Amino acid sequence: AQSVAQPEDQVNVAEGNPLTVKCTYSVSGNPYLFWYVQYPNRGLQFLLKYITGDNLVKGSYGFEAEFNKSQTSFHLKKPSALVSDSALYFCAVREPTSGGSYIPTFGRGTSLIVHP
Amino acid sequence: DAMVIQNPRYQVTQFGKPVTLSCSQTLNHNVMYWYQQKSSQAPKLLFHYYDKDFNNEADTPDNFQSRRPNTSFCFLDIRSPGLGDAAMYLCATSTEGQETQYFGPGTRLLVL
Image (cartoon, rainbow over all chains, first blue to last red):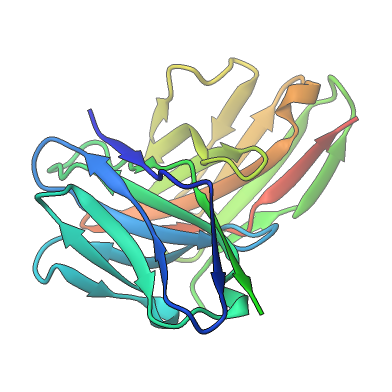
């Protein structure tokens, strides 16, 4: 069974400082990994994904994430945080399948607060 | 622009009064999902369609039903809403061979 953990309910960072939002996962086989962002009263918005290839994945709005197979982690990072990055961030994992279910499992979410 | 549209954005209903939420997509994706999300929690999958094949999650209450009359539209029917059904309802789509889910803006349901 697939599972994902976001160990922090909330991350606080000052504007201009680097940010990290943590995610660890458990799957059988090679994982498909995703990060989504949700602004208040909006749907989830895709940020980036890892399927295969380079362990460092670059996504929207200057975000990146590094796939670490040995640590089963996929932490989201940004070199310099903006106040507008304040939102709820969800990590998701899916086992690769050929046909059939395409259902990802979402983490519980991490609230990122960037202080001016 | 191709997108996922949900109507209405806000819905107020009375306890026990049936309500229908709608989702449409211009992405021509064959998979559509309905999620329930409460209070900044993780989205909880209610059901999904793979083409016309309906897949119900084991713990989705019988009070929740869905219809997908064609590729573009999907409806969520709540037959007798209770106070506990107040939540944000998210529609999403994806397609075989493309792993990303595309979400609509959500419908916030309030039950009085």
